[in-house]
Image (cartoon, rainbow, N blue to C red):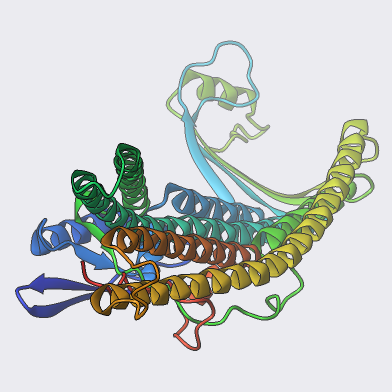
Length: 487
């Protein structure tokens, strides 16, 4: 997947778009991505500086991970190897040749004297097993290609989940720091009320305990944020200090049906192609006995006529007329036919290949059943998580409205002079409670987004979905505003 990476660099009050198109890669060939991406990242860091780091979208983060991840590069190597193996099965029909030399002095009687140089060649003309081996290599190439797609989906999932975790931790850390500020304000208010004789020392201690708890939570949230930023930076090959994300998630609705095709995803397709490759291999191994092998054989030799060995043989092979029958050149061409009649080792090997092929097919069928079950469970889980996120959003909205009402009562009074009056202490507690509801919204939506990514990964549609346009929202929004009431 190749996607344009758009970054905004903030300079004063202006937004300057800095756009670049990442280099496209061939699906099966190793790209020059590590070097180019490093240069791009360096240029981004140099252009933006530490004060205005580049913002990366989810699609861009996934694209960078696909270009840099060693698992993807290793899967591309497997594809090239499978392609070379397929070429080898065809190359058996292409004539081959070699040249050499055997210069020296021979002693005693030898039918062939030393050669100045010699050449041999040949090729396969017919083999009943070779067609099975070619088919096996072709199916192996398909399996490698499907495995590459599966690895790309896995890496895309890792990058997407890291992106979501970073955005979730950033929002959560901001909310916890707001709670920490409110709890510190609560400590100040409680101390002032204690000095005025309106609160007890227990109230002050409880307020300090609350502030200390939020301080600890803020430290932990900051650690989580740094760890997730470092993890995502390593995945996409961008320096962590210059990495910021735009926090947007595609609003395209999830596919309502599994992807078209006979297989649940690329991993299942790879398993079935691998099983078919083993079946073709077993078919080739079974055609060893009673099937002829026909080969072309070519041989040429140029004898070393200056050696004593050649001169001695000339004297031996003289005819009745005194002419030598031995020539300096020897050439032979012919067809070699072999008909295997009995080879117990190869027969047992054919039985082993057949059993291995059957086992691979059964493994692929079991994997397909597990994948379909997992997809079905994931779809049901997504519906439940979406409902939980909706509930959390409504609770946060209710808490925000209650906070607004409380703030208004602090400004204008409750209208009932005989009833309990709202205090600034109540306001701070309401603020803290509203932020708890907001964090619950973040957590619920984060779980929902994770389930979406995992389902798309299981169906092999994650990369395609990330490259689609934005349509109607598919999940509740996490863009819940901070408390509107002023201190």
